Image (cartoon, one colour):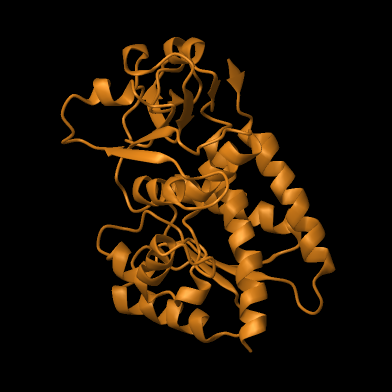
Length: 292
């Protein structure tokens, strides 16, 4: 069994981007990071993104509206960033407070600044294999993990557990593409899938993004499969100072011995999400300059 080191692969990408940004003429790429309220997880995620920006040389513009902000007020914040020629990318940190329509906010972001890849136009470009669009960062990170770990997808069976717009659907579309490191046969499973273990046991590459702690067990995995665990779940653990431990959607102790390669949680897919956000921001900067 080989552990896929997402921390190291993400650092390699950060180093590559640092060199690329240093060579860019004029102002450096700029991303606006919008975080509504003080949710502890959101605070932590935005700090990680801010640090990655600083490491690479990307300018981060931090905007922290109060949790009481209205839908129209948040739209106004996004509209202002859309109109600002010095802002290349916009990220609105999710989850948003329940009184705000998250999908509507994501759609309000101009497609050419949507470095999170959630805009309808960018999802359409992904389906059409149009490289001018932006791919959601977690599925893009999954594909980069597989490519840099030299996992060949062509002709192999990829099973995706989960059908969200953030991970499952884009990951399936990426694996299906007619290009190197893709060309897979893909099955998407979800909460209504019948005979689920029989399907997951057919997977050469299993992508678990179902959001249930340790859901994938040894009886669901074919020996020799590659396992990509996207889940990040907090499980109560009185023995830890935090009162919880992080675990993925895969029961690592029993599944790892069966796998040929597997991502850990933490340290697998998570760091890649931030790295791909940075990559999208640099891409947005270059495309925006060319469009002027």
